[in-house]
Image (tube, rainbow, N blue to C red; front, side, top):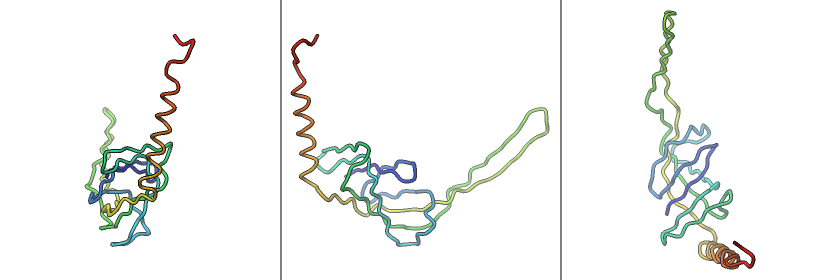
Amino acid sequence: MIAIFEDRGKQYKAKIGDFLKLPRISELKKNDSVTFDKVIFMKDKNGQTIIGSPLVSGIQIICQVIEQIKDKKIIVFKKKRRHNYRRKIGHRQDLTLVKIKEIKMENQSSSPNKNLRSSQKKVDSTKGEPGGS
């Protein structure tokens, strides 16, 4: 099962058992549980895909906080030629390391099939319209 979800303006791909580095969520501690419900895309075990417009309803991604960590250091170096201007600054981003525990679907079998069948009927009815070129 694969899902793509949105958290604070960024999109992440989640599979059960994956580890994700998210921007720091300060109110969480180690072994806390986090739930994300802004799911954009879902692909289940059977290969059936569900695309939201803009979101897929009834799907939740449950994660466990492993640790609050810092990312590797990046170097920000600024220089202007001919002006003796050089600045070297290091930065480490604060992150929350989470593990995907479960992807829950509330209406697992009924709603996706109905959506697919209704869209296929719409496509079939528009084919071969009279007066078309």
